Image 1 (cartoon, rainbow, N blue to C red):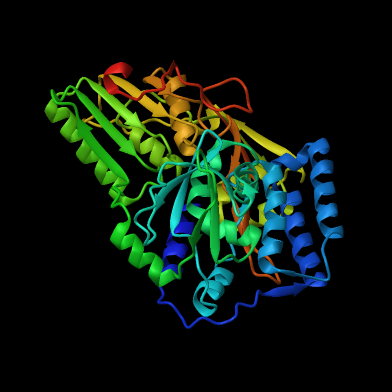
Image 2: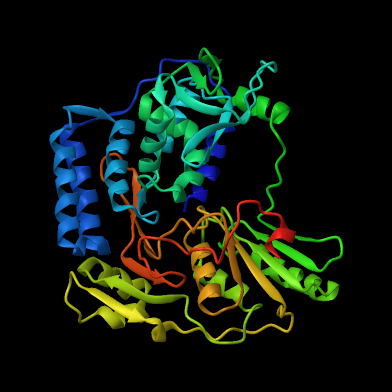
Length: 452
């Protein structure tokens, strides 16, 4: 879901610069916003498994009541988006969220001649750093420097606010989305700015960097930006070809992915590699079937991806499933609403379509705090079934218990889209529900000889 952000953002920013005009934010009346807020709350309260916890349900409802009482007579679409995002953040669920109001960003950048930051950021260990600077002043050597504040807003505050907009509060699992959305989120959170004043570590005075329009931004990025390898899937070998390293950027499972697996394991077999490193660091997840596609090359024994799957039964979900998921509808049709129907692992055991090219050597799976969703599930299956060794600097970002299989909705007045998860997944790889898959080997320096 989060990858849609990049596609929409690029399509917006590639439009040529318009003649600068005064940008006038889109405002909505209080009655319209209350209707949207109630609509959103109703969907979450009727669909999300967390609401079955009475204590959490009460606290979450109170947050919604406070948000409603604090609504002014009118509010911009950006400010309302932030208010809804805060409520989403309370769920701590990366599979329930609200989409950024891209049409408003287009209105600002294109119709309003707006500007954006000519630098990108990265998040490391709960701190902000300059990732890349593409501005015209090439004397500025700020890439890699830690950011203490932007426009007098501390980096701690910025990171906390932005994590809320991507559905988490203070966990690192959403930091990839924070990085991708940084320029837009900064604008939505703190308003329009023509100049970004960066307070950097070891610098006495803030550094003023002028914003640039969209056409200028892409001109500068093409001229000065690094040409990073955007391959979603990659296979490399050690000099003696005994170690194969497979990098998988996502488990979305497109045709390219399946062809990559086939070609990769063919090459691994032909070279006679004895060790296989599967790198799912920074992998945000994807589809369960894509995990199965990879495991087809690693085991011939039946397994389950999850200890259990719970479905939050509701009238709305029954109606949805009756049309789109008849096999699940048959299971919940006669169950009472507001209950959690749980299926244990025996209900969805998978018999691998074992491949002739299957790897039979030692397997190592690299993880980090941004190995989420299906990537964390893959690591959990490997660990539970002793298919390899889990190696990482931290546990996976997604908790052992998480939510998913979301349904999409659109707010009636602001037309902002949002999505709600009606399912609870409990995966393998750990015993604490609020933690991710722990590494078997904790390692800070990812040198392959050290791993082996």
